[in-house]
Length: 103
Image (tube, rainbow, N blue to C red):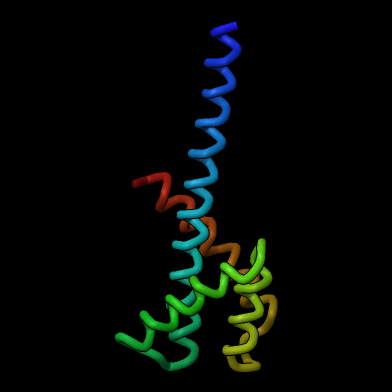
């Protein structure tokens, strides 16, 4: 019985660890997305950092990535397509995961 409890605690700990890593990667991705979008909007310095924080905060509106997508779509010029945004979201998530795994 003790081994079953140990196994259950191990699965719970792994799940919690995986969720924490997923959260950190998502926040990192959103910061990078904010920097990318800020470049398209001509922001730099403190304005660029403030915009990245806005993008991070937008992710807490609902579960999933659609809230971040809507924020970016609403702010970016028409020359940046939906496909560009979604592709950059995927690309930067992969980069964020790699960065988190390295740290």
